[in-house]
Image 1 (tube, one colour):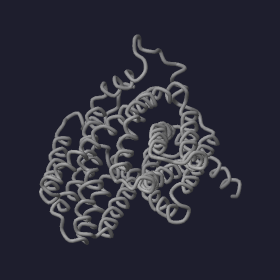
Image 2 (cartoon, helix red, strand yellow):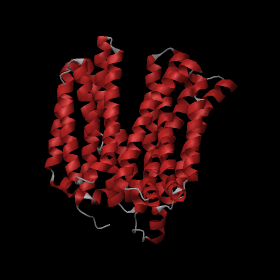
Image 3 (cartoon, one colour):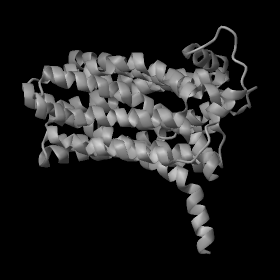
Length: 413
């Protein structure tokens, strides 16, 4: 009995290590996301400066992300994940070290924030690519592990800001950076301890490289040739661009006008909690539904959640439908992960994940800027119904496309 339990635990170890790293990285990034703007405000007392750092720190990622997939497919998933987490740890720990050596000013904060933001996508993408290897080594269903992975990542990003706020209150913003730095180091150690094969490297050894194709081009072409995955990627990109401003623009503006920060906290918590449960539900749902049916349920549920919210009802109703919205949207990311992993050749999955991540880096922030400008001009009560209508139309169009129905058909890969 003990030997059987021990063997099961040993076999499941790659999954445990991957998910511990996934959770710790999410917590670390969530904490840093809160600490850096607070640090800017402490040093400059300027909200504009905090916004400048937040905006400029995302720009280099647009250049780095496309290269990330190439590096993962060429040099391996584990090495790139470990290297990214170690580099992230160094960039975060540099805050208190630079503060001690020369003193932190806006220039130093901006430099370190840009470096850190440029390094994060490599670890995020590499860990996503490692899901296949961990599932194969541990005998866990790929769909279930994708759901767990995205749920824990969402949980990490939910817990991270709470940790960041606690660190600011206890250690101070500058010294508090030591804690996420340690979390990144532990995450790197967990990945380094994984004993798994690399499906991408194995496939790369036996592939015949297409003539004239290299780098990110292969990822773009691989994604483009899969009509179902291409269509769904574009649809989710648009839907995310419509969905995310709800959390980052519309609700904060609405509750700030009401001077009810606690109301914002309740609704965001409901959205986050629903997203975690929705992601966890993806694995069990795949045993009972096709991928297309899950897409149908997710998009219908998303509409049922966002349409009532668009009229900004009383807080309890907002919280309830916020939970429905998060719960419905939750399965979409693990579903997209799974489709890439089963439809794209292993040696090109890192590139495809990077292509998708690049698209998600560009479109949702642009949608947030537009939503923010529109809300300032006409008010959230006028803008939110338009956002909900755009999401509803996008969902209807997505479900009407014949190519999306092909997600359950096997590919030639």
